[in-house]
Amino acid sequence: EKTVENHAFEADVARLLHMMVHSVYSDRNVFLRELISNAADACEKLRYEAITDPSLSAGDGENRITLTLDEEGKRLTIEDNGIGMSRAEMIEALGTIARSGTRAFMERIEAARTEKGEQDAQLIGQFGVGFYSCFMVAEKVDVVSRRAGSDEAWRWSSDGKGSYAIDAVDVSEAPARGTRITLHLLEDAGTYTSRWTVEKIIKDQSGHVPVPILLAEKPGAEPARVTDGTALWTRSKNEISAEDYTDFYRSLSGQYDDPALNVHFRAEGRHEYTTLAFVPGSQPFDMFDPDRRGRMKLYVKRVFITDDADLVPRYLRFVRGLVDTSDLPLNMSREMIQESPILSAIRKGVTSRVLTAIEKLAESDTEAFTKLWENFGPVLKEGIYEDFERRSQLLALSRFRSTSSGEGYRSLADYVGDAKEGQRAIYYLTGGNLDQLRASPQLEGFRARGVEVLLLTDSIDSFWVMNAPEFDGKSFKSITQGSADLSQFAKPESEQAENKPETTAVIDDLITFAKLRLTDAVSDVRVSDRLTESAVCLVAFEGGYDRQLEKILQGAGR
Ligand code: ADP
Ligand code: MG
Image (cartoon, rainbow, N blue to C red; front, side, top):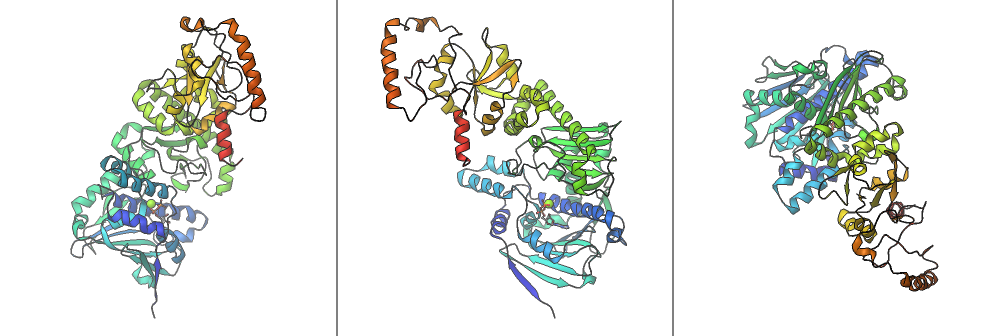
């Protein structure tokens, strides 16, 4: 007897499906890229597990992805002979949302919808949402899967409207190993049974997936190869076009934007590895996840091993791509890989190359670099206190708003180049937002003397400045801390007359009075050069926490 179990989707899945159906994408074709990339992942997982248990891939040798068109039945089938899913894996993978960043993604869609239209809708099209995207084109989806090595097969099916069903199927109805996904296409999605259309989409979107893709024109027909599954990164750079790189980036990262930068090189000599890395053109949604993990993939001799290997430091976690090396043994555990000195050598090499590429962009294309900086500057700056060795390099790369920047950005080299005669510090002011900082009375004295002050608004800024970096022999100094020491800079003529000696006595009285009234609230009251218009301002004592950092730490419950 047969039992069908019905399960409700997790609330967030239902929400996501609703968005898919009321399509947020102008380009529905992306569902194919998502399903093909899952099929390829499944093949790569199998290759990896088969290293320790070769019986898993016995029988059905070469990995492949096969698409079958069925114009009459209005169906499209995508089948792989990868790792497959057990019943529990199906429930976990196809009933919940495990992908990090998806929730943030949904929140942004919803915000964009209630606010305004097109531009934000476009932004949303830069990210893939995985398996559930198939409900953009299908009224019903059946997933039949048999986990490698298992003698059971299961079917998951759903119309994408709140629940799904799971039932056991006879292994004769399932692939010998792997997963078959059947899409019962919507009335207006008939084009996905046209050979010409599907072949073109595969070539355009998934031409560089490292598993061959085959296409059968109708059920029972002999499938023909559409792509050969050669790994793009193993080819030489001059054979690869910009479009090839972009397609590859998209299928690898699940982001649909154009990369801002790609770094492709082969290291030879002491260590041998190939890297193909991309700086995305927009912020990935998981960029500020608390785990701060990178997403670079590690391959050993073209076998995918893990995307958990910390191939770049945390402050480059927005970089997407892979490293393929022949220096590590295939059967090394993930834990051992993490601790391997070879891996740390690779990490160093990749980090250098990526930073060099970013530096080159900064020199050659200000506009493109500015965009990159606006997307990733807040993350890159984490490296200023986390990566001592590269601190000066990262400082030199950093761009800032300042009292002289206007709507543009200043580098520290700009700052130092325009510093006042004898100026020994790089002055900064931290705070929550730029307008607020620009209105700060603390800036008055500096403005009056034409001394530039950096305006730092990222939370991270309060941390790295504390770590006492120097740039070009100048240390960083908060203008809200300690005495402003502005006397070394000449005051503009117009204001010099105001310093009359007879006011000193009055001021002394005022200070005595203020100290008396504020004993518990402040540690000192002083005359200051920092103000020209305002009467008073609060400052932190020298060596204490900067005021913005104090706020952040209080916010963090410290
Ligand atoms: P992601 O690929 O980012 O994990 P998806 O929504 O695309 O997210 O897929 C969700 C999960 O479903 C995958 O992580 C995987 O565990 C499972 N899955 C989807 N398609 C397949 C497949 N063809 N073979 C095996 N597992 C699959
Ligand atoms: Mg996926």
